Length: 352
Image 1 (tube, helix red, strand yellow):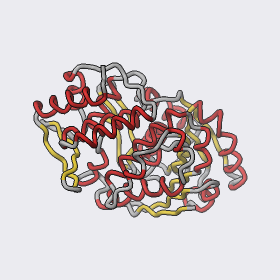
Image 2 (cartoon, rainbow, N blue to C red):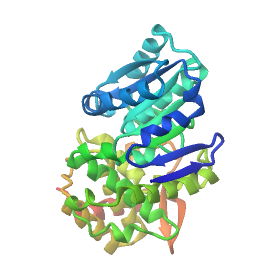
Image 3 (tube, helix red, strand yellow):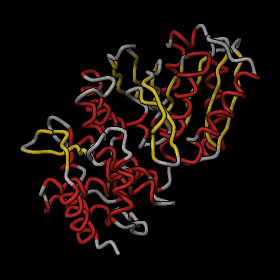
Image 4 (cartoon, rainbow, N blue to C red):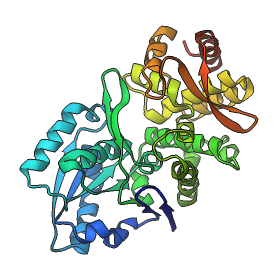
């Protein structure tokens, strides 16, 4: 078992272990809640909702609870779904003592967290991740929605009251979710003060299920913890957590089927090409192939460039998080250099 404490503007614990739900009884806001509002998606609901409700009703037998279930996938991280949840919450009597349980992957954490941040001007919420990918999104307090113009263009910084990471939920993940979470873990490995990415580069898909998940997830979260505690609202080094994401988000949004972490993997190849680290880019490309990532239909550079311009950390220029001599910086990249890196990425990935 691993227990961390995120020292943000509102400190909160992170519990990583099988049976982490038992720590719900220790959360101060849960102890005084008038009800629990579980927000989840249809997939997680069918697999695990009964388990969560059993814990809630056992730990808090006198406290009411309610459930809202949305469609799986990024399409639910929308203004429309958000508005529906606000309406449902008010109609069903949510108060400022209600605690939202964000039960699912990264999409649910972002959506439910944004509902918590804004309904009645803010109510408590607890992150209960059910995917490997959510080791990244469940910590740090970024919550929000997508627009048709791009990802995460609406949002807030709003810290959870706790993160309860029951790794036993990961046993039901399909291969694609393992891949998606893996590339976020790899990103943290590359950002680490003492990089642990080398230990991940030779993995096969079958190896992931055999990883000591508690320790690897804790390693990834610890990297993010170190950065978030220094820069909670992304005024400086927190932008480093977007390593691989600027081009990755563009590819993800231009594709109808690519998982977030798979897009980040492609984005990391692009970043390595910008850094001039062609050999490392080739290794990442081989890893994408070995793990079975199916590349989406390739769009023109102009399509991806348009999405990159809308990235929330960009202003008049395109900025990328890049490494040089083991240190990370946020650099403005001219269009010609971006186009060159794009061409190199296409060749490296054999991306038709």
